[in-house]
Length: 318
Image 1: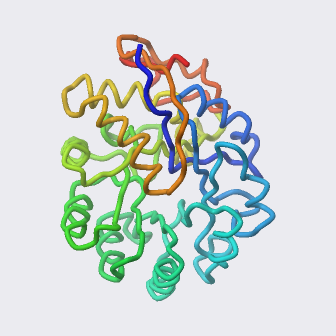
Image 2: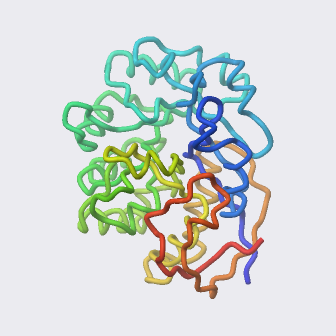
Image 3: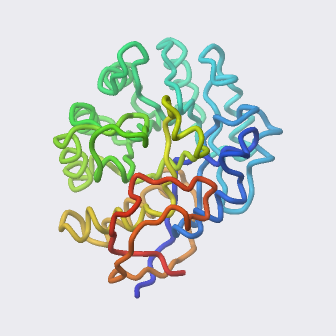
């Protein structure tokens, strides 16, 4: 049994307001707590979208640090009032779920973010092709020095090569990956966005975690109903809070890629630093605990997991 810093999830979806059949803030926090997270940052794709003071204040509470939209309504047409929302408690801004494809508008957002010392989080995807690499490349081309910019859920080798090179000249540039991108491959009913990649991409993600190209591990906890996930066209997203540490410990620490301290840095220290939030909570983990994932036992409303039936080592106890 070991005491370590509580985890900080800088990328999740609590679904409330608007989609309480998928998750509520209450059930999401219960799931996060069970997974060892002392702070969570929900994305803005709620209904109404978190692009205004009222919605921000509704979501904001102890351990919940809201991320507001970059564009009004997530429509990619008009920028939100960054200054007002930052003053009200937004820790970052992202249109996650969709990229800001208007490069002039994104460039304007980058400039405002630089002036106001705001963190922008990019959902890097070229909607015409689905390519992560294309989006990363074009966003890096316009990124000004001094703008705090963070790439969410990076999953591909070529994207990581671009980010690795860019970070040599842009020390404020950061990025994250999610547990399913260093442990799973292929495409199943457990559709995620970006999609699960090839074995060489998994190897590249692990290498980037080891060399520091990837700064943080975030869950991208994105619950849906059972009916939605079992439909012929399931929406992207999985429940991620309650398996994050076990997957990280099993696939990164037990396999010899990272130490427990390095895993803790990716899940606790680094995301707190990037977000500039306090993380003074601790958790108790059992690194010898061997357990089998049973999604039916999740605190989350989402009772499906791509790790169902998989045996993991390492579990949050308290």
